[in-house]
Length: 57
Image 1 (cartoon, one colour):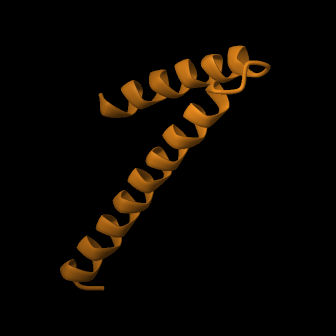
Image 2 (tube, rainbow, N blue to C red; image 1 turned 120 degrees about the vertical axis):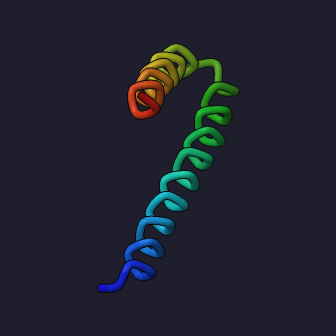
Image 3 (cartoon, one colour; image 1 turned 45 degrees about the horizontal axis):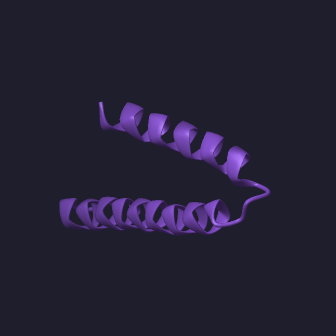
């Protein structure tokens, strides 16, 4: 596998992760609109933010 192929694979993996984050953000916002599950969603959202901060380190 040449360097260009490795770079392409890594780029696609990063793009997939970004798309997942965007999808999760949209889903969390929709869940938060629902009053009955808002507490659990906010706990998940906090956990998600914590994990994101850990990944950025």
